[in-house]
Length: 305
Image 1 (tube, rainbow, N blue to C red):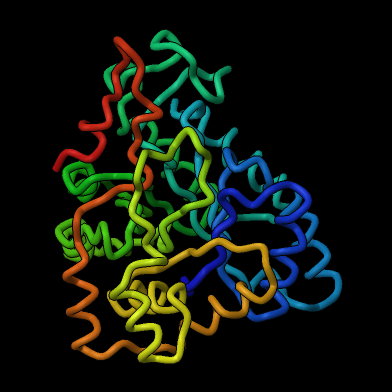
Image 2 (tube, rainbow, N blue to C red):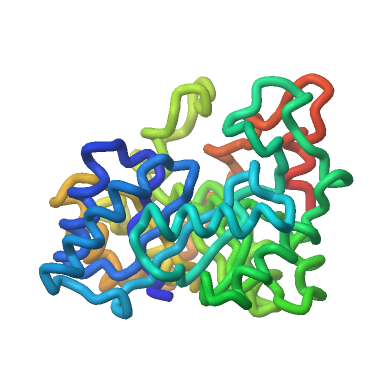
């Protein structure tokens, strides 16, 4: 899996297809997608055009997608992955992830009340993982993994016949999650960083008051000046240098090129130490949107180690 990929969360309809086309022409070979992003069909159109025009072949690409929370029963997982494969217009995925360790009712997309959730007693993650393993065995995906898993849950997966190969979580200098990254590595699990630039374009409902602006951080900007780079490039290079994959999102051609060039940037040991000192910790994606009065998924349980 290329360590630098293109994230497609928050890429709006009418923009994401062109962004993917530009990214592929620039040299991106890793696309991070998900059913809940609502843009896989437009990405599929861009992919077919790139294949037809000879920009890339399917074998050149690493395509990730994710199982939404309303397909967690074992027999439903295949429905979820086949829908993404069809939308993207490919024959298989390179990586399929369980998007959240949260289960909701089959006919629900974004739950409104606690009655629309299913507890992990009703639909254990082991059941979901059995469906993921079956998708792997059917050749619908070449690798399987998880997203938004804490270390405790990741360790539990280590005993499965087909353990998780990737864990995609929020990672940046304000939330470095060292124990999670190292614990994953000990179990042979690669960590992918989402929201590596601070995700300031995420939905307003997910934002808090007086959030720190990662791209405006004095240390990040100072290192950017030292390297003749942008703050975004410093954050991307930092993630790669830690041995994690990273999936920054952009739809602007100039920013797409800038982000891709960050793969060639190196921070010194002294600069990495200054970045390490930025740990707060602070989450931009808190998981509180899963909380409902009387519901089974308090955010504190999601991140508990």
